[in-house]
Amino acid sequence: MLKTINISNAAEDLPKVTQLVKENGTAIFILNNEHYIVQQYNNKNEFADDLSVQKTSEEFIQKYLEAFKELAK
Image (cartoon, rainbow, N blue to C red; front, side, top):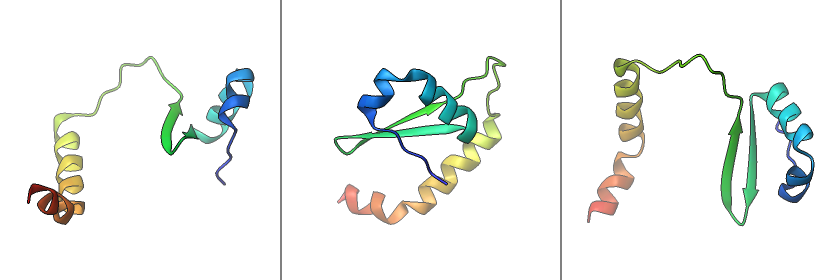
């Protein structure tokens, strides 16, 4: 279940924000139709390998290919 917190309250209650991130892995704030994501950071220096990045980018391009073509006009 997605839990939300008002951005003003989040600024005043950082422990509540960190608790939401610990419980859900991510917290999303919406302010004036802009989205901000807060994620827990692990300091293990884990990075995706090149093949994973390439596969993800190809999937993204295929998913939005029609939109990209329309923008290119």
